[in-house]
Image (tube, rainbow, N blue to C red; front, top):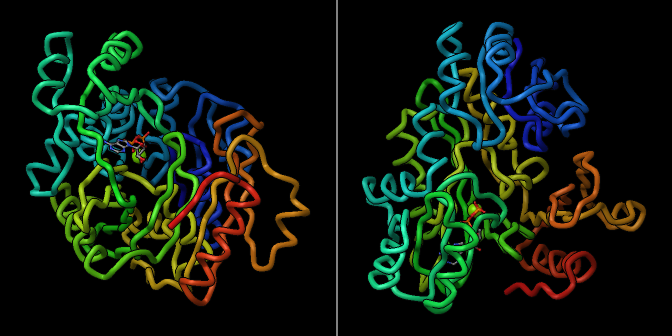
Amino acid sequence: MTIGVVGAGQLGRMLALAGYPLGLEFLFLDPARDAPASQVAPALHGSFTDPKLLRRLARECEVLTFDWENISVEALRAHAAAAHGARICPPIAALTAAQDRVAEKRLFEQLGIPTTRWRAVGSRPQLERALREVGTPGVLKTRRLGYDGKGQVRVKAAEDANRGWEELGRVPLIYEEWVPFDCEVSIIGARSRSGATAIYPLNGNVHSHGILRLTRAPYGPPRWQRTAARHLQRCLTHFRYVGVLTIEFFVLHGRLIANEMAPRVHNSGHWTIEGCATSQFENHLRAILGLPLGSTRPLGFSAMLNLIGDIPPREGLLALEGLHLHDYGKPPRPGRKVGHCTVVEPTAARRDRRARGLLAKLAPGLRIP
Ligand SMILES: Nc1ncnc2c1ncn2[C@@H]1O[C@H](COP(=O)(O)OP(=O)(O)O)[C@@H](O)[C@H]1O
Ligand SMILES: [Mg+2]
């Protein structure tokens, strides 16, 4: 049984590593020769839109999935699905919605999921109007292709909007209110072909410069968990979703406000590899193959810290009791996620202490509640 994966980044690499014990094989497609997943599994090298390669992927694989949402829906449809009728999971409709921040906001509104106030911005007059109607502070974002905080300009006062427009305005934008959140959380769940669902404990996320730095899970009161799970369930049902889906929220005065969704395994779920009965990666594979979903029971209280820029000396890290290191095999580069580490502790208090210790060592200056 071979799973075809469009994109061979670290998410794909962890999918493959979760699939091998189940006896699965993988074939990746990625333009980069040294991509993280292609270091551990066979890969086709070429463009995500290459008709020949997409057809070959569809022909050689039972099911197609993706580890990166900024791939071409048109090319997938035209070459992978049409040519061989291959099954693509998660559904293309969910991918399409997640690729466009405006479509995503409309979806949240349609499903009764509270989200930020926003306006689509395609021209200067629309920008002026958005500023009037939504107010400041806010943030201008490209509708498409943003990740790790890229393609965003914060607007503290109206003057910043002009700079934002100069920087980003060649492509369609969205302007949304800035939420002075108390914290950020995300929820991850899987829905299988049979319609069964499995939802993970809530993740508490700390970002720095738009990039996820720390996740702690389980996190927050049961009420947040219930609300987030209800919103996620609505999206899963809406799309007759198959695979893993993630929604990110801001929490403000105890209210959950949806920020964005990702139709895939998610960085805030990496702790599930060691911290849960079944990882998000394994459950994604189980879901798309129609296998029974695994338990999402936490095995303790986890903290996951992203390694950004380069991997610190391994000796120092591995000397820390119970620390699990994941090195994605990427060349170092400032601002780039090159690995992560996870610790699992028996209590939330001990987990938080460890998280603070790790931050002091690896990300000095970042404070957590
Ligand atoms: N409207 C907002 N209010 C407050 N913080 C925001 C807002 N939009 C983005 N951010 C901050 O920037 C981070 C990255 O933005 P996000 O919209 O999730 O884009 P990306 O696709 O890059 O993850 C968020 O997790 C949050 O910390
Ligand atoms: Mg995000």
